[in-house]
Length: 193
Image (tube, rainbow, N blue to C red; front, side, top):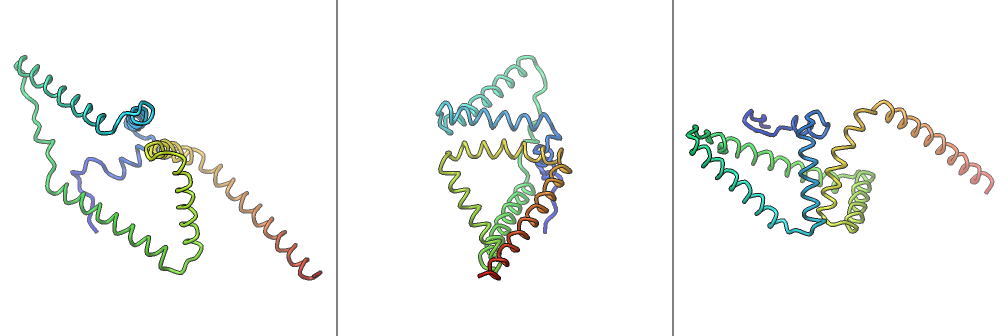
């Protein structure tokens, strides 16, 4: 197992902070960028390559103007050496991708080859539900919905964790009571039949 490097700009803590709205500006930026992307691509029917080209043209034009204005005003040009990706960062990214793929393969083997029928049934049911829901929306809309839900549900859960756990306990108690009644009804039918 490798340890996370200090040079990695995005860590698991940063992602968690964004999804739990602990870094409000960054969370809002993620939500705004995903909303703008969805509006451009889905509502206005732009092509992804067109939007990416426009964003790249904007970035190149802005840097060109900034560089020329800085030279015109005889200011020191900024040091851009920090923009390069080190070999260590690239290797660390490749390792994390490889580990994620290996964990996915292990999980699929665990679900399919082990003899846990209920886990297998739940996974198949979830995938069936996902395919059914996916037939109603295109991939971009589904991805946007996932981002919005992913950025709202964890915050709601963290803020209302005790209420949710109390409700879960109440639901379990009700389920046990109903299950007890159902078993009692089955036993009465078997005795009378």
